[in-house]
Length: 469
Image (tube, rainbow, N blue to C red; front, top):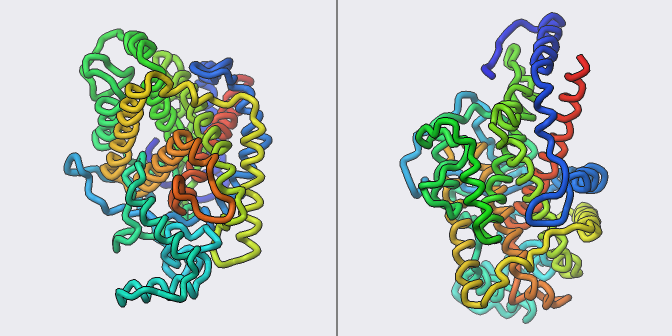
């Protein structure tokens, strides 16, 4: 939908309302796009997820995202695309990301340690002494043995860890803190060949798919006549579980991002004051079963599948945060305590969900084959995280990088169960750790999925209302 610039006043609002009602009246078939029943490759049903998300998770995760610890995310939006010369551009000014001034960042967050959530790292005097000693090339005798071992462990761990994502160098001058609340994910006008090249590269080159098998509704692929994509899904169902899961995760992420754009679309701009809201026409274009030749409901099912995967990761990582040594540190003692209490409450809810995805079914074959497949899985996903640096819109790149890192962190958690079970209560782990960036990305990415499912319910209400008009 293009921008409309008109006169302010009651007449304008009435016209906008009439336009929305007219659009709604065209869409009774979109109700069919709401998915129901049991999801493939797991035993969970859609209605259970809807109820769990609406009444338990969504209100709490929304509050958590507003806490200082989780609202500031450090990201490098100037890394060059490693695969092609990016020529994309956005059609509206909302593509821009406003970095956060240094003065606005809580002192505990900008103190400099990527693991600044552990109590052992929260002694500012020790950190300053450590940094000064490092500059002088001397041994700092004022550090406690426990703290010194923690710093060594962190460095060793970060150097050896097999990450699922290409991580930004937080020390780079180009890396800046962004206030996520002031830079919400929504429609920016970023579309066309540049945007499709990103998704085409992800699907065609990284989803274990031969080029001879076309993904449904890929606008960059040659014309396929009346092909409705069934040959693609016949091929997909013939893959092993792990490769099917990989595709569903990417498709679910794509669906979630598209839902955010449909739900926060620029409807009009009157005298420089934009109005954002649900765009039913855009929702229909992306998810209506008729317009998408049945593809829309599949995409939405993959969104629910991705939600289950990240929900499972949160339930698995709970013991990591339940330790007394973990303190989500910003420098505000009371807020930090309240933030951790809220986070642990969310973890309790995730553990209470009765129909989790069973990750033990993955990579369960012979050890050598399973190890090779797991590494291939990791490298494919890591490559997708690198493609995020090819997104030509800064705001799209910000949220793409964050959600990709969040999913990568979830996968890292699911494949580290033994290390998490061995965590010591009062000292840093030598086998499994999360940086602050990973923690922020993990919870915000899951928050985006929770919001997507909530927005989907909102669209359903609007569609049901339209059928009565």
